[in-house]
Amino acid sequence: MPRLPNERKAPVSLKDSELLNLLALAKQTRERDWVMILLTYWHGLRASETLRLREDNFSNGQVLIHRGKGSEGGWQTLQSHENPLLDEVWAVENWLASRHLYGLKGAAKKRTQCMDNVTFLQERLFPITRFRFWRIVNRYALAAGIPRRKCKTHMLKHTIAKHLIREGLPVNEVQAWLGWRSLETALHYLKPDEEELSDRVGQTIRKKSGFHWTLQGELFAVARSNPSSHGLL
Image (tube, rainbow, N blue to C red; front, side, top):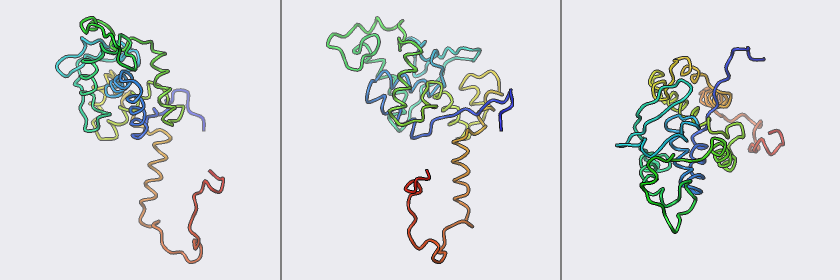
């Protein structure tokens, strides 16, 4: 059934495992990329908003967010987490303290001749283009086995929005954290995407007590094999 002209498709987001795999690949490859992706996820930033960040936007465990497209910015607290891959506080503090060792563009390896840390205060934290940022996320996501339709920077914004809503944070608080002026934008994330809906339907039916497996004569005397072995999937 075709969608109506004004009907918006539900935002697609990363699964937990997909996000962790993406962050792990970035961390293993280039510290700068990991910090850049982590900040983008935690604060639901657009690529241009992440790339606008400077070192003097960070103070006392907070970051000053400048949002575009009419969204509201402001100071937000950097977030800690028991999983080091998601620990934004540690990631940012470590990067701010050591980024001068990697050069202005944040090389993958430390340089033998490092620059004066003072020269970095007014420089962008991630001095690359939006297209370059997209290429970086796209490359890591594909390498992590993430479906191609999810391999883009804006997927990180969709993902934090979905995560907050799924975990029960009130919609108005999600709206405030992500800087949306319109509650309608936040409500849009209540709609499940195709993958999310498929998972929920499967989980719901599999939990039905009336469908629990019981011995059914000779019907399944031979152990069931993987459906993919029959060439059906």
